[in-house]
Length: 303
Image (cartoon, rainbow, N blue to C red):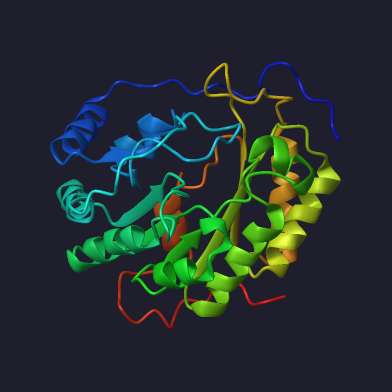
């Protein structure tokens, strides 16, 4: 593993309070919908909002899990709001979004983990007929294949579930999840919907070795993942997991090259890469359109 510096070897991003940022926030407030961009304190928020891109977070503002990297509070969530799908769709329409990303807190308190609600949000956006493609970023639903079938049965085009880190660090980083279960989730969705692009991601800076990252990327390809995102972990709050070190740009480039060699359709690897950052451009590069007939999409072939 390379020697990591105490401070990032690349510039920090700063929040820019632009007119676009204020307008995006205003629309989100008007429709009473939330963005993970704000909730997770994402460093890319100014850039994404400036491009009229946002990731909606549904099913409440309280998570049932306590992951070491996340700024969203843990507790007992409220019941799902049946009006949320229509509000998300209305906000997407007003914002003129061409690629909509929908993520969620973990809802282990619900029998289906919130799968039916997520599917309803997807279908509501697609039903608006605004020409938008839709991507979901979900929990593992505790490995419930019936719940996965509900989400896969929606009109979704990209399914994303992150492994977040290498197997050795799973217990400390995401104690209520398992690496092998996440791989099964990704592989099962691909088996249910071969036309859906399957996506996953992980963070660097938590103490992982190069060899562990390489093995993780190989495992994701074996699980038939099409797209992988690799970014730098940045501690959102003092109570979250510490940053062990900052990776160099060269290290990110090495993993991008490995991803291409392994056969991923797209590997995004850079310090500020996040699951949803640049998702609209990634969808464009992959040739994903809002057309109902998606048989032309050619994600990476199974290894």
